[in-house]
Structure formats: C-alpha cells, structure tokens
Length: 159
Image (cartoon, rainbow, N blue to C red; front, side):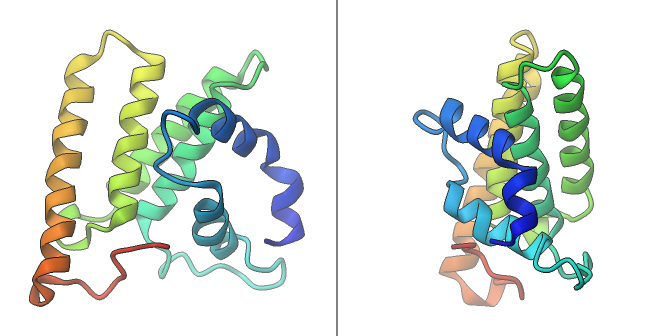
C-alpha cells in the first residue's frame, strides 16, 4: 500500500475492523487494502481513471468510511458517517445490478444494511428490502458463475 493511505485512513479502518470484525466481516482488511485502497491511491503522480473502477467497489469504500466514522468520538462524526452513507448509495446506483453484479455489490448491500441497523433501529422495512435485494444479488452472482454464458466482462471474485 502507498504511503498516502497509511496516514489518512488508519483510524477509520481500525475502528471498522476492531468494532465490527468479530461479528461482521464482509470486507477483510487485506481485501480492502488490496482491492479498494491500492487501486484508488496507486500513485500520487498517476491519476486514477474512475471509468475502470466499478461503482459498487467505490460504494464499499464509502461504506467502510461510513461505518468506521460511527465509532469516531468527534462530535461531527455522525454527520460525516451519514454523508459517506449517502455517497455509497449514490455510487451504488450508478450501475445496474442486473448485468453488473459482483461480489462488491453483495458487500456494499450487506454494509448498507449493517449501517442502517447501527444508526436507525426503527427503519426495519428498508433493512428488510436491502436483505432481500442482497439475497437476490447473491443468486445472480452464483448463476453467472455456474453458467458462463451469463457472465459479464468484469471479475466476480475480488480476492
């Protein structure tokens, strides 16, 4: 991982992994660093081309920031977490899950559901919808792995 990532994200990533890791681990720390941070922060002089970066992977990135910010003691951390959640929802909607579902799609949906569970216990309908959608996406990704003719151009497994 590049030096820029080491000083910018340690509190958020450590907060996400320590507080959520034992019971909720859709993205391991190594997977997050290798498949999400390194492509985004490959080099300071090398611009990242977001055209080739999947929106669902970017959504996972924002969800890690949102869930990690929930455990920050700063008074404005809750607002920051809500903003990152909104960014994650917006980037997730940039690509259809019908033709472009990957493991990152599943990870993002699981993390969105977990964020809603952590922030709003009264919004059961939204969490149930996300769980149902996530289950459907899991079946779609599994179908694309079983039947290669349905497979998209992008990789299904991020590890």
